[in-house]
Image (cartoon, rainbow, N blue to C red; front, top):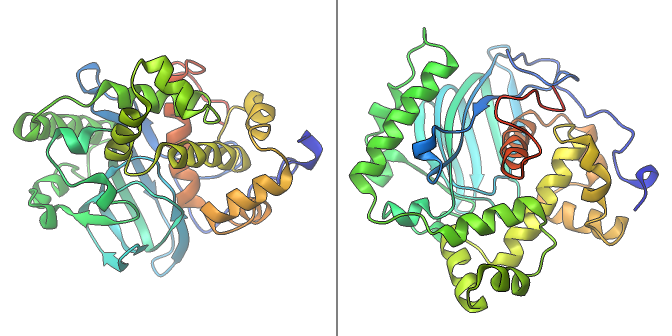
Length: 319
């Protein structure tokens, strides 16, 4: 697939000019304040993020999310609605656990919004004796439903504090959660599979089993438990997320050709992309995708840091 026929290769991503954020890409798309966790939380947390977006009071933003990991999301402003696998769920201020997504989850929010969150590493739900991840795919649960202290998490972020203050408060609360609930360590095989998906999502499961020195069936069981779905589905989603990041302009442009060549041809790309995102790559570029872009940017930053293409704190290629 050449550069000239990659969908969106020569087009700038659509931007919603009605919204404003203190953090943005070079082409004006809002992004989060985000960073890697402290060293003692690296096995448990992939990334912390803080998203602050201001809009007119009655502005309704219709967008979506597609995340490959479970995520604690603390919604501090805005009225949210999500179309989950078990129907629509709505909330104002709330602390929620989102499961990973098998495809784009439609999300709408009315008014200005602030969201603070923690992307959990694979295996963490199992390690803290939480819900089965397969039961959370394309779903979400409030902390109250999960028997967790929802108000305490909502109170972590004082309005006068900085995003970094909020992240430090979240780090402290994650340490308490792990100390209170962890019954085991996250499986290192899942961490290696996560890194493999970031590095080359076209790799075969048999090859990874050989590299990890583990029986293939055992690897498949661990991935189903800690990612919520089959290994091939995890890799297929990772490939699509990398392409989506490129199309939205939140990827390392030097990787563009390699990302495109993971698909056999343009029809293969369009078919798989449309199945996961509910729209063609061209539509994905042309429509404003603020929530999706925010999520993709945080994931792509973590991915580039994991595969050593970006050092923590280094200026990102899209900034």
